[in-house]
Each structure stands twice: as C-alpha cells, then as structure tokens.
Length: 317
Image 1 (cartoon, rainbow, N blue to C red):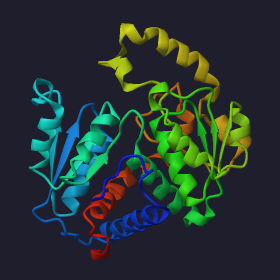
Image 2 (cartoon, rainbow, N blue to C red):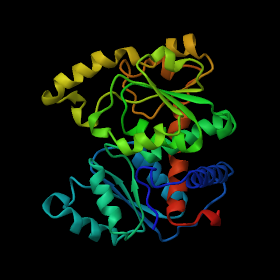
Image 3 (cartoon, rainbow, N blue to C red):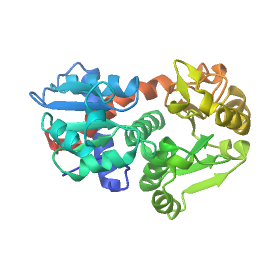
C-alpha cells in the first residue's frame, strides 16, 4: 500500500510520476474537461491544527475528481477522549484515503502502520511533502521543465517545508542553497539530511546574499510556529522565543532588494500564509517576479495527483 509521509519512501520515478500526473490533471481542468474517476470515493481530512490552503486544495481537488471530502477536526471530535490508535482505525473505515494534518508525525506514521487505506502527511512538524511537490510543479512550469531548474534558494529557518523540498530537489537533481542560522529543533531529521546531503546538491550558508546569487527561485516560510499564536496574538509562554527568532532571522528576510541586487531574474516563492514584515516584505509579494499565487493554486493540482497516485490510478488519466 502506498503512503506519502516524508518523501523518503518515494523514488525519483515516483516523484516524476506524481508531477507528470499533476500536469495532466491541471491541463484537463484548464480545458474544462471533467475527471470523474473517483465517484463514490471518500477523502477523510483530519486536522489537528488549522489550515486554509490545505483544506481548500484537498476538498476542491477531491470534488473535481468526482469524489467527496469529509472535514474532521480532532478538537471537536472524540480523539481526545480515547486511545488514538483505536479511534484512527475506526475513522479510516469510513474512507478511501486519509489526509492528516498533524501536530506530530508520529501520529501519521502510526495511522499508516495499520495499512488500512493510503495516508498523506498533509503537514506535520517534520514534513510537508504536498507543499514540496506543489512547489516543484510550479517551478517546473515557470522554467519550462525540471531540467531547466539549476538552483533554488531557501532563506530563513530550516523547517518541515525546507526538509521535504530539500529532499525532493536532491532526488530530482536540483541544487538547493540553504541560508539559515538554525533549524527548528522539532523539524530535525538526520536521516533525511543524510540522504539529501550525500547527493552533493545541497549547500548551507549563513550568508543570505551568497545563497541568493545566481539562483532561479528564492523560497521562504514563516519563522514562527503556528503554536506560538492564539487569535492573532503571541501566547505569553512563547513571547521570549518569538522575540529571539525575530532578531536572529531578520537578516534573512525575503524582500525586493534581495532579488534586485543578487538575482534579478529569480522568482519569489512563499507557501503562505505570509507574515508581512517578518520573513517576507510587501514589496516582495507584489514584485513582478513573485509567483506566490501560482504556487498556491498548484496545491490543488498536486493534491489531485497525489490522491490518484496513492490509489494507483495514474494510468487511468
């Protein structure tokens, strides 16, 4: 049974299959062609933390494939009242694929270990494979093919998104330069780092200008964890860490000056939501090189491809 958790379990050929499938389903969507291939199939969307693009892209994508998505919030269901293993095994009896946006990847791995239905890590503290694949799809479109992507750059803290993007690039033969003063401790995966680093395609620096030189794409993501905030404000227990990161990471902000001074042709990417004035500036979001909204849209098309691949329907499109 196929699962999508960290991308460690996927081969280069698997990634290329998913990406090519995404291009096909997107082309059909843009041409107004219906793909009613998942009639009577159900995607269970389990959320332990909130989201905008993840829910929208999976729910809309599943609908476009002829299936149905069920949203399940762990906080308003009965997961907190019983053993997780018992509850998740029962939940998976109601669907054909489980999309799980989790606080801890250990829960995703446990769900997948039962091998009842395919499981997707839709963002955990360590991985975000759907985002990484969607980003690769976007870059491939703007470069006219994967073979034309020579180098990408990551600015800011290393986290779950940079982990899976780094691994995807390493498997696909794309150079990635990471400019970061530190990695989020919760996101560290030494096995993943070893796989990526052994390809010789990943480089590290603390010099943002050096990383941004002669690059095709500059990526960034929030410096802060979602758990730091409540109702738009920093929780008191995270105030010190919030201020520490803000000071440490300010030299790594993605702004128009970084692009204009070091790589005038580089495209600007951010997985959203954007924290303006922190990891990215308004002039970067609105820059002529920004492809942030293309990137957001492609989440839907890559989710469709992932679901089809997990259900082994890649040859039916």
